[in-house]
Image (tube, rainbow, N blue to C red; front, side, top):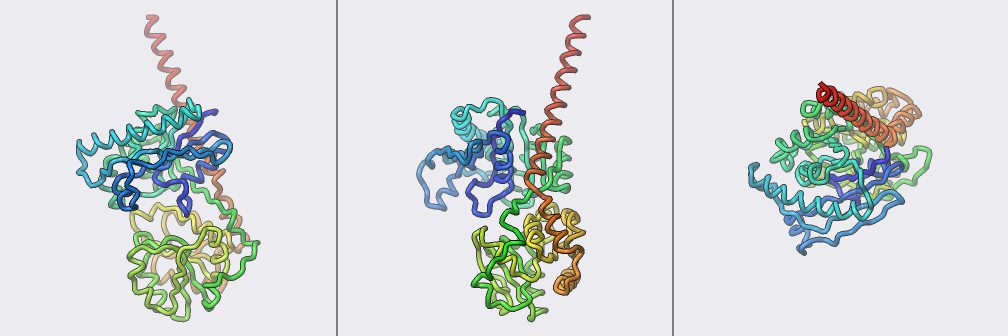
Length: 405
């Protein structure tokens, strides 16, 4: 299938923590030409960041022989504050037309003709792009239940189902999200979750990071964004206060709820802040138990926690909240539905009572590759393309038979 890909989404290419869409783009670029489009900046965001010029410089940067990153040279209007009505739709269509115009310039520069449009959950800025750009196939990708987030809920409750219905196919990274999407588009596929585990190599020895040297055994740790909508602060507080002999290590940026939480007043809780991605394996290697104390809510229930693969790839014992998606890890991770089970799980992990030996956990984590996920994506695209071709053939045959009568 010699088709190029144009990728739009909600995350810019140079986001420090990376993201699914970028990894998919890099994997696709091994076989296809890929244009990754950074989201345009709206006026409110520009105002807050004090970049109030009419628009950024439009750039097209070549990342590899077959991958380019395009930054549109426009400011779009900030619309999310508007009621969900005809005025919002009218202005949003204008935003979309301006965005599409920028993308067309990049497509012409690169000589893309037949291309697939891959939309990573950009349900507002990219709502009309399939009509405006006329791709060969339009693929909508859902990897989080964003409609549980206030920003996306305002207009997304109407727009995302409509966008899914417009798509040639919908793909997701979990069975749960695929089930939700299939209510709006029956041509929905679970393509699984890929992980880039190159840096997370248990056989590579790392020195103890300086800010971890003074933390005593046992070190119970979480590595990732500290976001109260996703993580259970109450469990972390109860863990630290009920077991003062344990040291809770938290590595990652904090939201307001974490910054103002009582965790900061506890001697056995260690906030180490954000770290470069390249440094994370060193911190992970020197934890005694890695945890994922998620909230159980509509946002997290279908979430695929990539960090669990990273934990396992480093050979760490893992204790995590039991969700539908985490059942995939049931043979390798201690799962807990209650706080009591969570604490018992940490005790077992410290005692070496894990569901599987480290080598099996490492092999399991490394089986979740982006190559595998993108192969499933391409298989889904091919199946839809074949179905469309067959349908068109049958329709043409019927037309010929009817005209000959």
